[in-house]
Length: 237
Image (cartoon, rainbow, N blue to C red):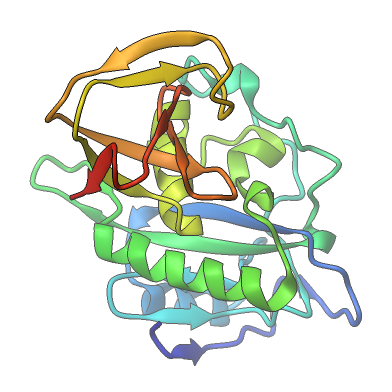
């Protein structure tokens, strides 16, 4: 994991002590910038918002101490921002708050067509940070969520659609795997081998796993179905 660079801001957060952190909230900056750019920006004055960390390809910047309360998820976002999934946002509004969460902003780059994106290196660095916080504070994978889940804001924008979020969530929490089927694999509705058969995977093709059971013997595909992923039936690629 990258060394955390402290660029603490004196603005836009509340001092606290002894707070119980239950959630890690994932954001994207929404503009082409670096972690250091953002650290400098939020040190520069009253911005009306804040986050604990900013992450890019080369830096993890701490802007607000974890023990303090960042201003990151408190308002109720609009639900009509152009995504067919917007109406599903804010499912955790009132449960996840600024007071019980740590917010991590992933920094963006812009491609030749002007489209913002998040690099795989930034995702990897964010995953290292997420898993370190999870281990230190005892936060389970289900409590690693999006800003979208708190107040409906389309953030992080590239990962609002459920299949895309499932893959990102799996990467952030260390569950993501790519496997190749050694034979035709039966897809079932749940992780139980006795659950309803809902499909069949083709021998020799590769698939993404976004979640595993406790024994690591069954894996969930991004469309929701479950398959057996032991070495007898699948190989890692």
